[in-house]
Length: 74
View (spheres, rainbow, N blue to C red):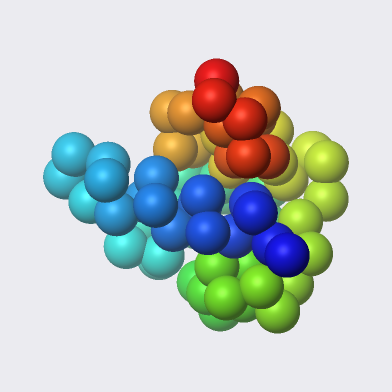
């Protein structure tokens, strides 16, 4: 089960205002992590694994904790 992908989608859509996959990709690029829109889509549907440094970057870009992205309550 891919917990991170579902959490990325939740955080992206619950962001105020919600972020598109392309906007999230742009935020990641600003912090030095290259995941394009198609990569974000694959992460969200569970077709692509997420590396540890990508979890940290996704958490920063989405303004959530890495722990929460990994299924915790943080």
